Image (cartoon, rainbow, N blue to C red; front, top):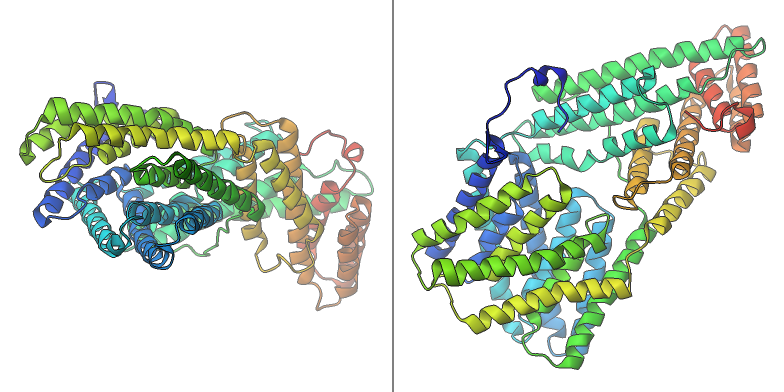
Length: 618
């Protein structure tokens, strides 16, 4: 996390074995929550106590708000998934091949929904698929047990959620809003520095800022579960992000104003004065929203932060996931291997979770590495550490090094190691499958470990045969959609959003453009093209909004002419319309500074590249 100047003077945090005290506290909370969940599950004699421990490992997040929001979506998705499992098993239980086809369609449908959402909402869509896999597929030969298995899974998950919430409350897990407020303040400073020239005023720098701003959108919803004032903090954080994008957009408009000439001196001076005033007002609104975030009050103006998602990309990802699952299921049908329900279940789990990441193949590769490690750890625990014992105290002591160690790995800043630690923790509990009494059948363990590893290998092989949508193609789709929206801007299709909210939606699209290639660097020409569409769309929306205010007065005719110039997308015609509007406003003794201030940047945004005097917009 970035730190501010004041925090650099604070004492260094306590460090033990290379990890700060906060990481050790997090790991201890996860271990205690897992023990509590297992103990209650054993005491209640649930059919699947390991699901409660798995829930704790899935909810292993450093702050209270993050864990509780994910827990809520986990419970909701479990209920939906169990209902879907009952419907599928009851309708297609005796249809053999048709049942597998329906399951493949279910995988594809859940993948599509996950592709249209973000954050924990996308995780909930993936978890619906996972629940169907773990309930319907594992009971594929005993459909009458689907309801019982679903109820047992739901009860175990509920116990896991309660255990996490109780331990976080008793051990005072940190709140998330101070961390989020610090990140938003850092973004605001970066936008201010960019406008003042502290950073290069280039398209890649602006696109990177928009990426970082839009990437915080899923995080702000977690505040709603943090406290009774969480909803107010969510509105404040959301409004701050929208206003920061607004400030960045206005700053780019100010930087793009043309040089003063005898013909345009009055227009440029009007635009510069208005834009500076508006930037100051926007910065004040950001500070107001940040104050509301700290105090837990609602901001003076609550903005929505709409999400952009490409239906075409989501559809193609869903088709690939559904076909991959069906091909793997067909492979097992042709080989005739017994006891492949576990493998099919894990294939669905990997495909569904991969759909929530920007790079599904990379996620599957991490799963390929994580499952053998998890199998080895589970084998060591079961046959070397526990070695036939059944006392809960020994189970707690034996789990401590593995759970705490992997939880510490999750806290590392390296995303690869953090993801590997999380998957190894989840898969270790899944392969170990703690029960009361514990089973020590080596044949069952070896078969479980083999099919678990095979599921990851087959998922990766299916993605090699049907590779995920390439990053270059995703970028082409996203830029093409931005271009088509720009062509239809002003026709009423997107006028239901305020310009500030529509700008945030465009920022979310740029965030997807920059992450389409995963960790690979993005070509500067692509960033420039994405920012050009962003600037043009912003200028058009703001021009339409300001001209709409003039349609019912003496300046209606001139405003209509300006609308016609905007429809032509001609920089010279837009500049001439701004000059005509200025003269008409002077004759009528009315103010049209806001419309003029928007028309001048629009004329620059739609000017030919050679006319701008620079090869790139700022």
